[in-house]
Structure formats: C-alpha cells, structure tokens
Length: 101
Image (cartoon, rainbow, N blue to C red):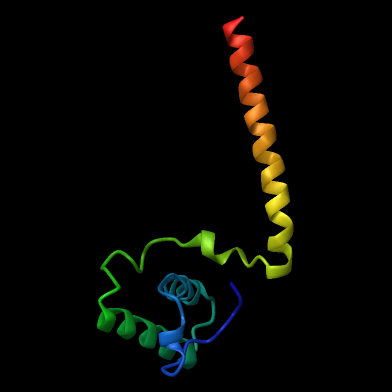
C-alpha cells in the first residue's frame, strides 16, 4: 500500500481495509503531529458514520496490508508463488508415499 493522506475529500474513495490499515499505521507513528491527529479523527468519524467500524476494529493488527509491495513486483510474485506451491505439493506427495511404504 502506498503512502497517502486521508482527507475529507478523498476518504470516500479509499477502501475500508486501507482505512483501517492507515489508522493503525498512524497510531504506531513515532511523531504524532496535528495533521496526523486530524487524519485519525477523520478516519474514525467516517467509519463510525458509515457503520463499518467496531470497537475492536481499531485495535486489530493489519500487517498483511502494510507490506508495501510495489505493483511491478507483484507480477513477479505470481510465478514465484506458483513454483513454491508446486514444490510444496510434490514434497507432501513424496512424504505421503514414503509414509505408506
């Protein structure tokens, strides 16, 4: 996920899971400035207004969204993941075959 700033104008365009991730990232930031506080307030009020928040939603970790994988590299991951899954499948088949014999 790229770094972006949530404002009252663009908040309706940002997916909800990104809003939760952005909220978590801002809360973890070392330096909380007035703009960060304002952004936190905007996100919290928007999620309450739309009914997409819960009491524990702000405390949940959303690390999987914060991986910051560039779009260009994501294309490369597809073939790597396919290869690793094939290796895993073949290794499991071999283990099962060895256990049976």
